[in-house]
Amino acid sequence: MNLIAKYEGVDPEYIEINNGLWEEALKETVTLVKKLVEVEKFHPSQITILTPHSRDEVKVKNLKYSNTKSIEGLGVGVSSVFKFKGLENDIVIFLIPNVSSLEAKYVRNPLNLVYVGISRAKFLLFLIGNKEIKNQINWNKS
Image (cartoon, rainbow, N blue to C red):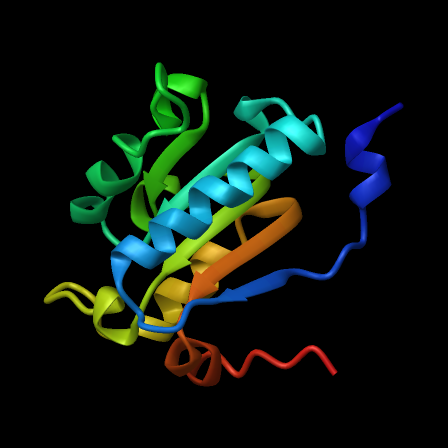
C-alpha cells in the first residue's frame, strides 16, 4: 500500500507547546518522528525537520531518537528554512517554539520565513510552536 496516497489531502497539524521553549518543542519532535517511523511506517528519508535558522539545526541533529541513534543518524533530514528553500519533502516538521525564534538581523519579515517553511511539505505538514506563534500565523482549522 502506498502510504503517501493514504495521507494525500490531509490538513496540516499544529502541535501547541505550552512554554515556548526549545526543549519542549524538541521533545514533541522526537515523539512525532517515532510515531511517523514506527507506527505510520514512513521511511526516515521522507521526513525533514525545519528550523527557522541554521543556528538552531544542531539542537535537532543531536536529538536522541533511541539509545543508539540521533535524529540525524536515523536518516531524517534536518535543515534551516533558508537552506531548504526551493526543496521539498513528503513530510515536513517545522519547529517554531516562539516568536523570538524567528528573529534574526537578516530577516525583515518573520512571517515570510514561516510561509517559505510551510510550503516545503508535499503531503504532511506539522508545525510545533506556542500559542503566540499560532496566533501570529493566523492558524485556523475551522
